[in-house]
Image (tube, rainbow, N blue to C red; front, side):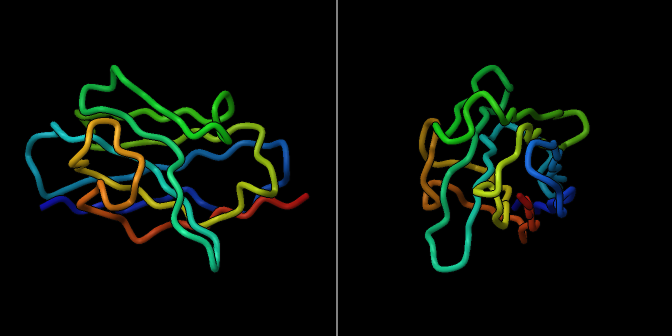
Length: 124
């Protein structure tokens, strides 16, 4: 069992940066993939970025490639999403996910554990 708690969301202006964090607990080892998804009202949850358990492999949605950076610190049991050059279309609830059943999973159904989400709002 893995528990996830996101933090760091907020209201920012377009062009600025925000850093989301995901604190994990419940499992002693960190040998599982982590990812970030986002969702807006009326739309399906969409993949944003993922990272393998060792941090050596990262993968991104085309919409955020070059602007967002995913990372993790297994010693601190945290995952992070650095979001730069934010755009109004990045506005969403951002979710941390863990334990993918697929290699480099990009579907919500690939992940077993989820956080409660944190709101990110980017004003123009």
